[in-house]
Amino acid sequence: MATKPPSSLSALIEALRALPGVGPKSAQRIAYHLMQHDRSGAVRLGEALLGASQGLRHCERCNTFTEATICELCSDDTRDASVLCVVETPADQAMLEQTLTFRGLYFVLMGRLSPLDGIGPNDVHFDRLIRRAEDGVVKEVVLATNFTNEGEATAHYLAQMLKARGLSVSRLARGVPMGGELEYVDVGTIARAMVDRRTV
Amino acid sequence: MATKPPSSLSALIEALRALPGVGPKSAQRIAYHLMQHDRSGAVRLGEALLGASQGLRHCERCNTFTEATICELCSDDTRDASVLCVVETPADQAMLEQTLTFRGLYFVLMGRLSPLDGIGPNDVHFDRLIRRAEDGVVKEVVLATNFTNEGEATAHYLAQMLKARGLSVSRLARGVPMGGELEYVDVGTIARAMVDRRTV
Image 1 (cartoon, helix red, strand yellow):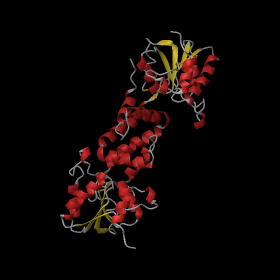
Image 2 (cartoon, each protein chain N blue to C red):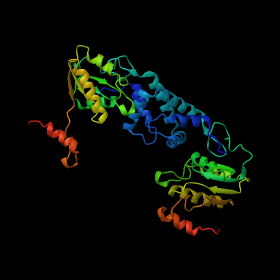
Image 3 (cartoon, rainbow over the protein chains, first blue to last red):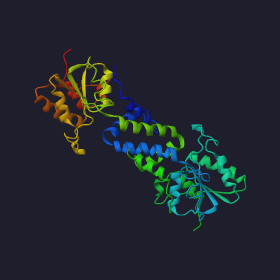
Image 4 (cartoon, one colour):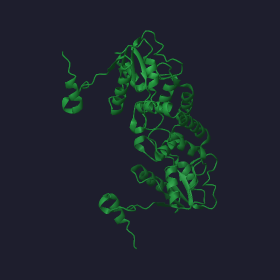
């Protein structure tokens, strides 16, 4: 009979499977690597996981991760509270912030509609977004969900709900990306860029 | 300016980079996933990492991970102490145990020679293996390192050291794998199988 690994090792291998995309073999490899070569990294990661799990909550205004009740960005009264930009994840928000082109506030969905995965409007808390957008100050909602099938479906669904409540709704422009060579850009993108062409 | 993420979130993203093959983008994705969808998994993983980092040590006889001084397998006196099988990792040992073909004891290198990565004989603790093999009981050492370049180099190096000490040294047989179709097996393997052919 095969001898069982020590229980704290098998608990670690089992727990590592909580990581997305990690199956039994990778979990084993990761566990051996950490225990053999990087115990201090393992301890740091263990403490960071416990610290974040305990400390992080959702901002009551924009739904992003924060340690306070209202996140830093939502508390910044130099931002334009009349424009609300809807993104899927904090990473998307960070990208938009880096562009320095938007001075309004955000709402972070922390997900997207994905009927194939059984993720419907209730799972993404659209009710919270609607309540947020109906505060009387927000005039325009910019939909900045991804340009994937799920992101587009989410934007379409949200646009209908928000327009029905008298809000002005916009979407990030589509077109040929910076540095794009027409020969190598997909046809759908070029078609869209032609339809949305701008006078210069 | 981009707003900074909350400190426990950025600490988690940073700490996740201790995992092999995880860069900044994947660390961010993993952190969001765990915090949004699987906090209990994150807590379990955090506790498992701390538990294993604190509880696991190396078996004084075979060098594998154990919570005791001598691991379960080395303590089993029904095993044949005259044969010692050398493997690279506990995963390799587990595979061999599953075959039910070996009743001797093991030594787990927890690594292999890899000069290109700067891993030499001192880093893999060959001295401990030599001391273990020279206990007067061990008669034969079976080298079961991998059949990769590094594993072969390790086996070659160990064979020389062990033979110089009067021990009988063997290596796992090479040949065509079970279910192998000659057309799709590499030439090196077939050449080896021809040279090592057996009378039936």
